[in-house]
Amino acid sequence: MPDRPNPTLGTLLRHLIEKLDGAVERSYVESGLDYRPRYTPIVRALMASGPASIRSISRSAGITHSAASQTVAQMVEKGLVRFEPGSDARERIVALTPAAKAMIPKLEQHWSATNDAARLLDSELSMPLSDLLREAIDALDRASFTQRIEAAATKHKRSKSRKKS
Image 1 (cartoon, rainbow, N blue to C red):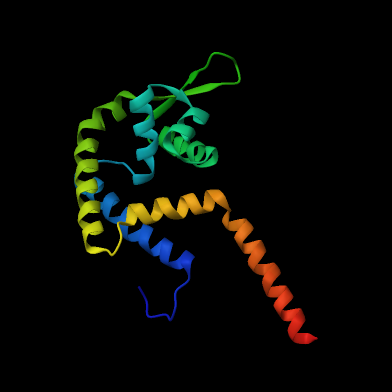
Image 2 (image 1 turned 90 degrees about the vertical axis):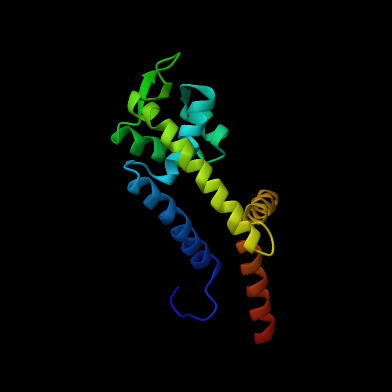
């Protein structure tokens, strides 16, 4: 990371994701897989449930509907999933393609190695990263970051107006 004093939360998070996802993606490429880490929650959800709606996938994967929809669109372009008609004309069901199903054994090996690497990383930290991330997500479920920004901005405005008085 470049020498910058006090990087902000967003900068630190982006840098962490670059380091983690970049390494995982390189491992896929090195083993001949045309696959991105962001596909994993979708693939895992479809492996668990079989063909499903994007809404169902997003719930199962623990990601937003928008993220699931965008990722599925990328996966359609890569030939990893396809849309099938749902029970009514409005519903589209996402299913793994034979190409994606053929990747699963190799992907499971990668996921296992990635989980082992994550445990090794956790052992070097003062607190397991996954625990800290869950704790942060739970806190944001109680009060969103938007709510926290608004509260901080209000407090900042009050403080500024007091100084002018």
